[in-house]
Image 1 (cartoon, rainbow, N blue to C red):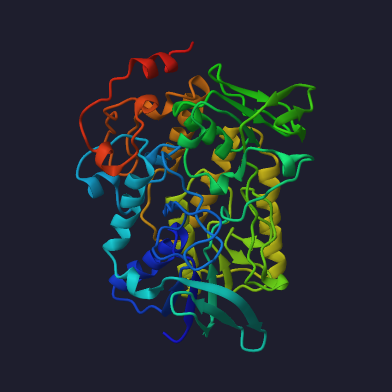
Image 2 (cartoon, one colour):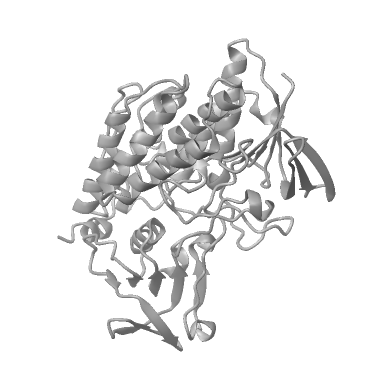
Length: 461
């Protein structure tokens, strides 16, 4: 096969792309020349944890936003690979909400069964892309960080799989520059221990604010205040967590809010989201979008409409994750192999607009889940990605939303049944609110932690 594919990023989306080509190769079919480039020293993308903040070993801005004590905030049964189940990997049922080390082990388990590593060049960052209109090829300039060497490659297809949760959106509030305590973005948050006994302010009402808030509560902060711009998260918070209107300004260590209230804080964490940022791409090829379920300019949420040999993976706001990335990768593979025909540009624009209009009509969390479920069904109808019951997964997502509404501190203790192999999850040996050790070793122990103080904290209503 005479064309060449470049993949930028070896996180879950980039790895899905490699797996999609490998599945084709296992059927005895020829695949193109593939090269994948990853700026970190290992695969896994956001699931790589590092104690560092700001910049990494070679002075590059850190990609990962992973922190200690992070546990899955959605049922593992909703993100399970169709061709590689949790029970296959671990050899037994586990709970529905594993911590980061366990999830990373699962991600690695599937990719380690392949030859994917031979296609990946680690510690390598994309610096610039030139697109040749005449030859329809991409010239990409890379830096080999470990060897301090610059080189270039030419590709017929370029796949951007860098994710969109690594460049912080950091707003300014008057007086923040003189705030005497710690100030950080969620991107640089590495754990709640440092805030034990303190009063912290979280700015934003995203999933990161929700999760960092309950993590800090769990690890002993004095209080958590969450400042929202438009709408509160609206959970039934314990008395140590409360939501207030938008932050207006600081005076010393005191924050003032739009509702007229004020409070003194020891630390501020901005949970204000991330930018879709692709500094290696020229303006004409750069995806420009807010965080949404269906970005503009991407046909089927993947193919860049202005240059159809440029593909983006995993750029949507996400309910589904790993299995959606797989569906996208399988579709992208079949498109590049000529099995999926795409219409002309005008028809593609109409299709994109129809999806975007449908998203605009969604209101509730259930609506968003149904929208993304329909999107994945549309992709899977065009590929041979192993089928699974998406409607059942959607039902699990809706149960998850209800569980969080019922009790934000106990929803991670719920268990579900796998849609892929019908295996029932087992309860973790220790309720989440009492489990302060997120290590792989601790997860697979069988002894419960007894802590009456923590038990009393969760029974707050």
